[in-house]
Length: 79
Image (tube, rainbow, N blue to C red; front, side, top):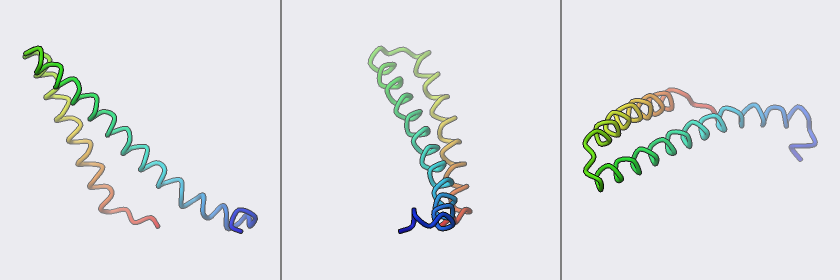
């Protein structure tokens, strides 16, 4: 019974917190990507070159964030 042992439950919570942070970061990036894909699709349908350019810039920004997230994951080993 992990949750009845205060010391053990604190240890488990300490391990869970960084994982939850990673998950939230991933979900946020996923949401941003979904939004820009929807924007790209709309701009393509409307043949709106300004909106396509804006979406393209947003995609590059998100790509950099994803790359940074992946890089960070390669060097963190929290178990």
